[in-house]
Image 1 (cartoon, one colour):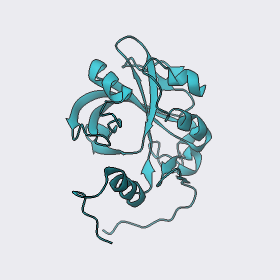
Image 2 (cartoon, helix red, strand yellow):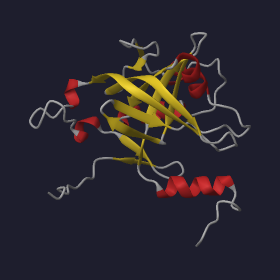
Image 3 (cartoon, one colour):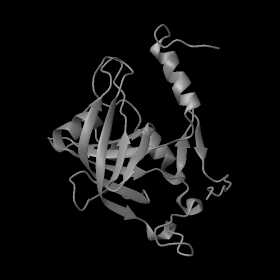
Length: 205
């Protein structure tokens, strides 16, 4: 099958992307609006971009009506956000936050997750998450304002919070034990994956 994005429906291109680029880690992003309303939403277009300085990025999509998502609007207004890592035990609550709620809705309240004060930024962390990254906005790359388009949010991590219970102290104080973290990833459609089935490959010298 050959697909020409210039003639295919954007929704079908989206299906190809999310089915081909798998598994995708989930950035559970907490923000706060200029008016003080909390927001919490998951994004699976997410990765790290640099270790020195530590930089992460994620891409909120444009709504079907061409509008920006609340997360992006909040980050544009405040310049701050927190990335919380999603473990298996909070998968259901994360999924609740993926609904398209009005701007005045607090997803912390909807999901029952607990806002925890951050050290350096105003948006709270998710207490139930094992890893939090407090971020300061570096840049937003506006890729497309069309429906199902997106923007790339790039932020510098200015504070890490890591649950000591998931650290593999037998290896290194900075090594996270994936069996203890139990992070989940996004596949195509409504499917997610666990990280319990793993294998090792040593990098060539």
